[in-house]
Amino acid sequence: MAERADRARMGILRALNDTMRPIGASQIAALLLAEGVDLQPRTVRHYLMQLDDGGFTRLVSRRMGREITEKGRQELLTSDDHVSRVGIVSAKVDTLAYRMTLDAEKGEGSVIVNIALVDPAEVGRIVREIQLVAAQDLVMGNMMAVAESGEELGGMIVPEGFTAIGTVCSLTLNGILQKAGVPVVSRFGGLLEIKERRMTRFVNMIEYGGSTLDPLEIFIRADMTRVRNVVLRGSGIICASFREVPTAAVDQIKTIVKGIKKFNLGGVLAIGRPNQPLFGINVSEGHCGMVVAGGLNAVAAAKELGIRLSFYSLAGLEDYASFISAREVLRKFR
Image (cartoon, rainbow, N blue to C red; front, side, top):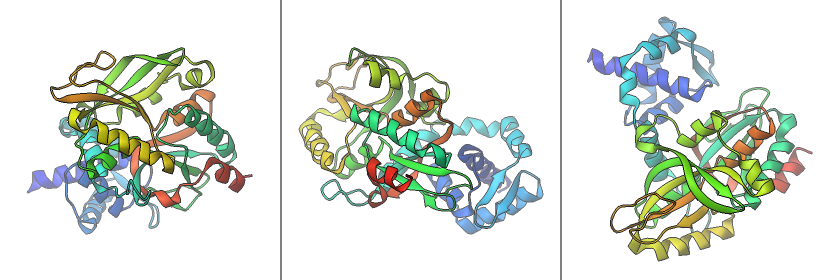
């Protein structure tokens, strides 16, 4: 019983540490569920009070929730429980893809959202970067959701002094295909080299099943992308993910991808031949490779431009009805 409680407390600390912002018990419970830990918000609150007493967490406000303390971070670093984190991002991908509800024929329902927090004065610049990257089909779509301080987006309460910009995560495509009966396996996230507007090879990759963070988030934080070079000069490095799909479903996939374009959604860069490598990556028998542009490419471009921002991949779910065009966002923040 004590071991189970310790794991629950460590899971709560991880959730607070990974989100890098104050969150409440209900949000923590949802994050833990993505890891396969099923705790009710009431139980989470019980553990949070214990962690508060130990100095590992602190209450910011009843509305915003709690945050991890430096003592809590040290506890995570010295804990053996970090071993159990391997593969967490893979579980989160599967959970969010299952829970999203977007109807590919109606364009209604929820999608997986990535969130960037920016200074309100920078909204215009980052939106223009999103426009440029979307025009090259290097993201999932050109629509975005915007929330101001105190408002909620993807389950996040926007902190004071920030504006949140939500973009559609490319893993939304997994949910769309799975709801159509097409099984999809996300193999890895990587850096895709582009030369003279032609995709050439993956220069780096991280398996989803062996990472605790979204691989694309890791590459962007490490300043390994050159998305703006691709947009402006036709050569550079973008984020992309490699997935496997059944050969028998390729025609259906192409039909679905074509259909969602009317809702300003896309992102598929290439679909390989049956049982054949795609950009040098082997696939399982009876499958094809599929390369999808990273939904964070626009964030990467903004970061390369020098815009200061915080960003969170796989942040949560947001109703697609909340997404508006770049023109509408710019009009709102004029």
